[in-house]
Amino acid sequence: MQSGASMTNANPWLTGPDRAPDPEPEAVLPATRRQARTGPATPQPGVPTPDTADRLPRWSQAWPATVWWLGVHGGAGESTLASLAAGSRPAQHGWPMPETPGTSSRVALVARTNWSGLTAAQRAATEWASGVLGDAVQLVGLVLIADAPGRLPKPLRDLQQVIAGGVPRVWTVPWVDAWRLGPVDLAAPIPKELRALLADLQLSPSGLAHN
Image: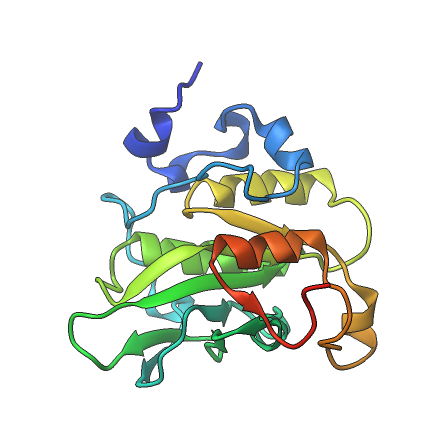
């Protein structure tokens, strides 16, 4: 039996999906403002620093952004989110390191929900959790964008559950067929899950996408 204390006392990266507390409710409910924090808000002691080959690049950033969307792999959706959220920017698949001393970049990881996307998200989250980025990055959570219509297969739900234990929060965005077929239409309605994500991060929709 595990209590909620495992969030702070146990290393989430050493805990498999079979040890996560009450996994099924988290697996079937979308991450919205009703969902509490899923993991640690700051890097955790005991998390090893990943090998250099498993780390994301770092970019020196002078431009401000309310939130940086960091796609942890190609095609993750960071540019789509940046076009939909005023004041946010795509991080070009690397950590945005602020040039101004004593400041930090507010970063949300972005990944697709296939196996390669989820494992890339886990590597990036492990890099942050190891503390190697110092105070330059404030990780607000992980945005998972569906890679296909329909329910996520159980093995991927289990992997998502493990990753959720190592980041401050997880949001899920469903499959949007229009995003596959052409450029984002800022006048089109956006999914309620995406509206909740923007509200949680205190972002305003771009254009008319608030319908």
